[in-house]
Length: 464
Image 1 (cartoon, rainbow, N blue to C red):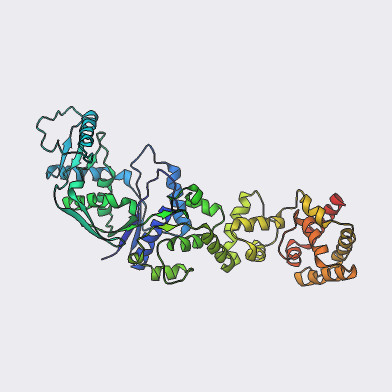
Image 2 (tube, rainbow, N blue to C red; image 1 turned 90 degrees about the horizontal axis):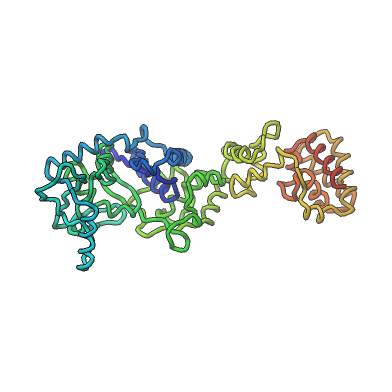
């Protein structure tokens, strides 16, 4: 049997951390088993589904590297198959038309509440003999009255539901549109899904879906319900906890491998190991090893992992992400130093690619202003002779590299009996506008002789 999993998001909102983790677990399990990972967009809610949300889902999965088999399946295009299944259930007597009006249903539930009962549909249209063909109706599934519907969940173990607690599910609305539980069963069966991996908030749907599989004579997949992700305070995830569109992590400077590594550890572990390559995850991950308890989102851990991946990546691997950030900042890198060399100078000090792009700014954009506090602190009377002397000697320097510049900085400071910071900090401010940069000799080497001299002369004219 070929293992086939799926991710089936609804494009009524953006792809968030929880959905991304579900997709990751389904993708990893399929990869681990040598199977296939499918993507289905559940876009049957036409009023709330948006093209923007669909694109965020596709972009987010692509950014994370969670490639799917074949073309995405759009549930909204499969209405004919859903209606055909409903008609089959009607023909077999396992579904029926319900003509109850909203007023009748409200009165029924009010009476049940008054009697201290759970409000639920009582099946009164199962044997209705006087339906009006001109009256609107829904189609309901004839749920078993007795016994239990059970499953062995790959995460939660054995779970059972009393059938008497499950009323007759609506399969088709009065406007003729199929409902979620019917559509998902038909689609999973037609797509050959063998393992349904999803959040535990779907667990209550599972007994109804199992009953539908059996009624339609379809093979029932195995289920794995993953506990939800909570905020660090134990509350439901919200925007303040990080429940934002997954693509916002890309825009905030996170690397996809760091996000993948972080997400997989929200519910799964392998000893005390924290960092895994994608190949290791495919080899080690098994859905049976996912824990039953809710995971807690930890922003500090995500930041730590992102820093780890930044430092351990080859500069060329980060070039596209940093270039994207620089472009979004309106900075043109053409004509400047090789971006990969700039990245190498910034890797140890950066937490994300936004930090890296901010650090790279000085190499492609001359300062528009100078930090007033930094100027007041570093431009004392003795700074100007040091700067002038360094400028004169730098103009004569033949080999413009970090080694020669380091030596030149030392010579000027020794000549003026000054510490390196007395010269390095004013130079940083004049070439970047602030007092922070990679090591000064490396910074000047990357900036280039002509650009350095131009910026230093411009700064001296403005501040002296």
